Every structure is written in structure tokens, then in C-alpha cells.
Length: 237
Ligand SMILES: *[C@@H]1O[C@H](CO)[C@@H](O)[C@H](O)[C@H]1NC(C)=O
Ligand SMILES: *[C@@H]1O[C@H](CO)[C@@H](O)[C@H](O)[C@H]1NC(C)=O
Ligand SMILES: *[C@@H]1O[C@H](CO)[C@@H](O)[C@H](O)[C@H]1NC(C)=O
Image (cartoon, rainbow, N blue to C red; front, side, top):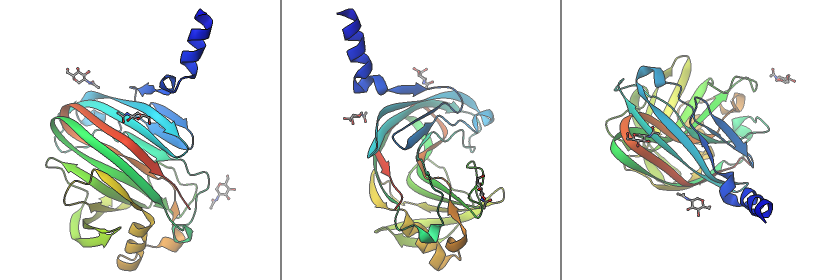
């Protein structure tokens, strides 16, 4: 009886819940990965845990709890879920990158973004911790935090208006599409953002490989923060 009960618990979906609190704590399943990435933690003080609530081939659900202080204008971390790309493909040859999410944030004095982050590089074997280009799509901008670089215009992509920023992150050129008003539910095709950049910003889509496809949050400061991605899905066609 007791053995059977333990076995039943181990097989139930709840048993899949994984909590990652250590630096770069990692979990992958069903073509999705999760990383409790705290790359900028040294610029302040705090802690963070990422919990995988649910994962299937058609999408995931997860949350992050954190407290960060100090280093007011420095990003502390980027806990994320990523779509694993078994094949690195040239951006111009990708048909579509459909995605959807529904998320919310709770906490005190939260200063953070909620953003997609995709790296592309001319070398398909480029390290996945950076690229030649970075595309960010900010669905949320909580508090007085700003993307890298300067605003270079506005853009209408995937059925909505965005403020477009451009600048450098080290050697990497960064384009950030920032929603003027928080978008808590988003459904769209990320390929359209690359198409926009190819048409309007000389982005070299025919010589860049998509090497990462991630969604998460970049905290600056705040306390008792809970970021919940009640659903997130992404695919490459
Ligand atoms: C954040 O701080 C609160 C209050 O001290 C604490 O209850 C919570 O566990 C902390 N969360 C993390 C992820 O450190
Ligand atoms: C990438 O790495 C694979 C496996 O090592 C290799 O076969 C391929 O030639 C590399 N591609 C480039 C463009 O360097
Ligand atoms: C956790 O996942 C379950 C199953 O998909 C879902 O019903 C529930 O809303 C999720 N919880 C949160 C807090 O997102």
C-alpha cells in the first residue's frame, strides 16, 4: 500500500514541479528549457528561485520569485524559459516563430522587464550566451527601467505599436521593441520582428542563424517579487 501510494505520487504531474534556486540552475523537458540565470547578481544583493509548474511539448507554465537590491540600474538576472532549437537555421529561411504567453507580476517596488530575448549569429556554433545581434521584445516595463541604447523610432509589428531602441551590448547589436503599455497576453509571430529589421534596419537575415529563443524577466530591483508565466509556448517552422 505504502509503496503504491509513493509511486502514484511520483507519477502525478505535481511531481514534475522543479524549483531551481542556485546560479544557472537548469531543467529541460519536452523541448523547453529553464534557467535560473543570475548573471548580474554581483551588481547587488538578493536571491531568486525559478519553479517549473508544468511542461509539455505544446507549452509550459512557470514562475520566478525574487528579491534584489543595490545596483539600481543594473540587471541582476534573466530567469527564462527557452525553446530548444535542435537545428540552428538561417533567419531568412525560417517560415514563422509563433509564440503566445500570458503572464503577471506581483511584488513591492518592482523594477524589471518581461521580455523575449533571441540571439542570432553568422556562426551557427556561436556560444548561446551571446550573438552578433540580440532581438528583445519587451511586453512589460515595470518601473523606471530602460533598454540598451536610444529610441530610434516606433514600429508597427505583429499587430501592435512598439517603441524601437537600438544600441550595443558589448560587441552585440541590440534591437529592443518596447510595448508602450503592458501586454499581459501576447500571441504573435516573432519572425515578423526580424522581417521588420531586415526591411528597415539592414538586419542581415540571410546570413544570421537563430541560436536562442527565450522568454523571461530581467529584474533590476524590488522585493517579494513573483513573476508568473501561467502559459508560454514557442515554436520554429
Ligand atoms: C524574499 O523576501 C521575503 C521576505 O523576506 C521572503 O519571504 C522570500 O522567501 C524571499 N524570496 C526569495 C526568492 O528569496
Ligand atoms: C559547426 O559545428 C559542427 C559540428 O562540430 C560542424 O560540423 C560544422 O562544420 C560547424 N559549422 C560551422 C559553420 O563552423
Ligand atoms: C500550473 O499548471 C497547471 C496545468 O497546466 C495550470 O492549470 C495552472 O494554472 C498553473 N499554475 C499557475 C500558477 O500558472
